[in-house]
Image 1 (cartoon, rainbow, N blue to C red):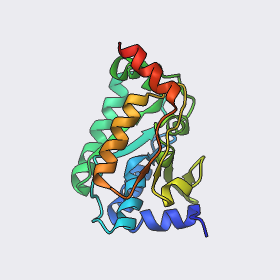
Image 2: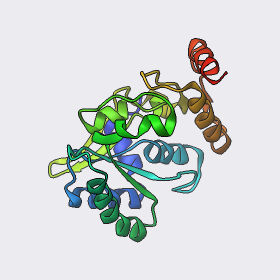
Image 3: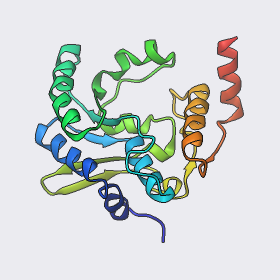
Amino acid sequence: MPMNAQQFRQLVLRFSSLDALLDEVAEFALPDAWIVAGCLTQTIWNLQTGHAHGYGIGDYDVFYFDPDLSWEAEDRVIARMRPVSERLGLAVEVRNQARVHLWYTAKHGTPYPSLSRSTDGIDHFLTRCTQIGIRRTRSGDDIYAPFDFDDLEQMIVRPNTTANFSASAYVAKAARWKALWPKLTVLPPPETMVAQTEGSMS
């Protein structure tokens, strides 16, 4: 049977530090807050390949959505999260998705739209296998996975060709992952997007 949301939750929460981080983020009561992306996907890959918890995971991304677009407001949240990061021994990176469009293009060189919610940020990830989020509420844990869990379960890295997709960034990220998890199957980006990327660099 294909992996479902409940099975996914049970697997990632075998990592007690992730479970504790969910509790901490819920305690902060940040608006529309989720743990997202690679830390979840790579936890599953580590379970599938027999690696230790935390192997290959660079950071633990926390998204929230606050209409206050000031850097000062986001910086206060980052500062509040720092003791949690140190206590749990996790490199936690927290970002307000309401203001990503203000800095993304300058940093990455590709356009990025103004978002309406945290899950919009998940929708714009480079790879489908990382389009996953989990949050803890008073009524239980919510899972967001617009493409379900097939690619995750089968260890397939597939491009998510949204408006801000970068073929060069995808290839670099996938190569880094393949070196860490050789069992991954990496699908190439569309040839037209590779050509566009090469043309913009010439």
